Image (cartoon, rainbow over the protein chains, first blue to last red):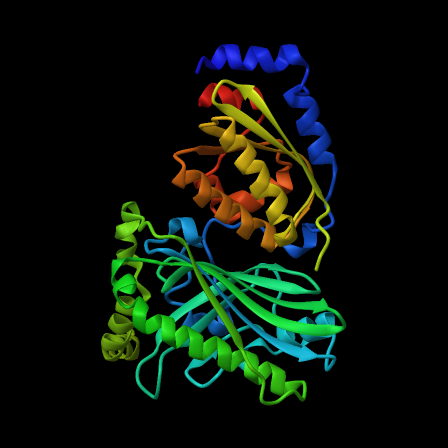
Length: 265
Length: 116
């Protein structure tokens, strides 16, 4: 393609406004979603009160599906709550008590003020009483009917996770939609197990959410679609940030850190 | 079912390059409109697809998620995606989500075509 010719043709056809006009016009408008998005940050920082849990989050960048390694999946979990609660009331409650709806095995160290755009929350996941994997999320977006997390480098998944309340025919549906790739080759190896753990975890979350609104014995609908079977081998080095390895190292070296701080070294 | 408040227009900007002009709201509800536009651009033989966001009025996280899936579709077809006409606000969202690492951001159509 001749770039110069292409550019000339566009201008001649009068189909594109001059760049400066476009830029000035665009910059002068504040869209109504402006307050719903996290402010741009290059690296994540963790609030002091939860910094002890944020060692795999502080200083990391976020990682979306295109920064991950494994196949791209869209996984959706939804539950019908009928007329027990409206979408906005549901999402307000979900945002205010997010960690309370998690099943056993996960601890969400969110702010007491709830889910707000730009907040960074460390979290711990893992079964039983054994060691847990420490990671976290950035609240990328939040409005009255949905909120979205984005994961940091090293998290099991390079992903966006959207939680929403949706209304149709007078009934409210609570939905969790995850767009993910595993972050690195090690997590990709563990995907068959993690996939089942994910299903159990998010289904449990929706059951707890439903129960809190007086809806018991719900059926959680699960859908899983592989959007891209390609693995992104260019991102295999993500293993350097692997939160599983780093959490294990953090636990193993804990006695030495304690000793160091006790001696004031 | 949410009603999409989006209109799209597809045009050929140069041989092998199509522009998808986006006006209105980009949310999960606009998936059909945007994917159809991408099909139209693909059918025209585009190897470069330029998304013109000059008319973008609103985008939520569902919209960003949809752009991720659009990106995958384009990559599967060996197409490159570029974006133009982003306001500072939306440019920052692209940077925050690191979509700018996969979708090249340009000030205008001419520079997007020149960079191709």
